[in-house]
Image: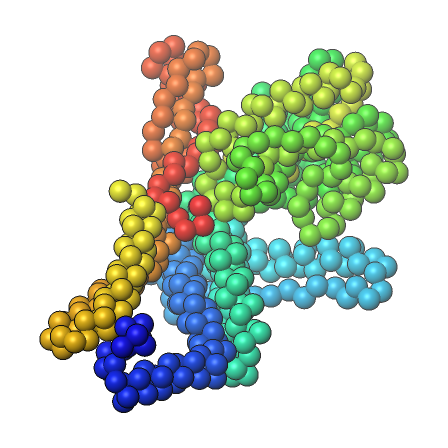
Length: 377
Length: 127
């Protein structure tokens, strides 16, 4: 009776009932003991499959968005061959240079990046020959984001199939545990795709926005490097050379090359470089929060940062960095209000830095780093 | 109720139903002497378990739906170069910061787009 009262199934409280309850209990334990790993494997697999379905939707929508963006620029239905060319281009890749012999690796990386950019520009000019420079640059951003989403989808699909084929708990568990972070990245790129297709400024454009605010009233703006403009302004009797990527098309330009040329033009007589950029915030930090430090605030793959550091070291020029914190999704999607409003606070910090750390008559470089989509000058 | 609140509510409700269902299963054993009551409790327990599973499924579907919704509205802030005139309107294709958009209705000065920023829409899973 006592056992029956605490048993799980109503098989009765006499001989057979007790045996049945015990059997069920033992079978249940044996099931858990023998199949627990299988159950775990199945759970991880299901979670990844569900995430992959979402990624597939994002990848398909991305492809569709690229086609819609091209259609909007051509003003008519696109031909089958262009459709096929877009699908093929979504598989575009670039191979990083060998770094076993690190000598000249950044020069080689820059070369690869230049070729990559040229291929993008060439492809876009072929599919939308009548589009303006700004539209082409924005479409370049759309393509970049679509390639990123497509790549994430394919990588996750690859590891899921590999995990299923090898029945590897290790692969599936790792995938499942990393899925929330991977989904955040994929969503951020998907958001970027929509923002780029409409030409809206993104969070990463904070640097160019600050630079644009400083140079907007300058009488002369000149091109100093590929897709980079500079203007001279007088701030408290200092000669301040402000530079940013040339907007409002979606481009980052070559700010490293621009800084290098400006320093060379001035024979190395630059007393300070102030760099402004968006930076990834840590969880718990507020979006739009400012922080100051030293060093080249630029998130490029390496060549541009190297040029700035190299020139600053050669001529002994101090580099100040002012960063505005934001999440990856906020950096890639339409600029949030708190980021836009942080631009004025950054300008106050720049003015303070110029006042306190330079003397009258000095030459200072202020570089607004980031993608200038939706921001003119 | 917000989407996140609704999802939490569905999840908690499904957990409560699972606990009740388990309790009914135990109770069906305690009242073993009355077979009809015992069977009824066990059936009820099973039904609650299915309901709990269904609610859990609904919660998961709500998560998936929330993921598809992206904040996408943007606002263009227009200012006058000569006076303190300020106006906000929805983003229009072709807008960019520092684009001259017209003449100030207050002083006749040049109007330009000073800011463009996003207005958060529905919460996404990652936010």
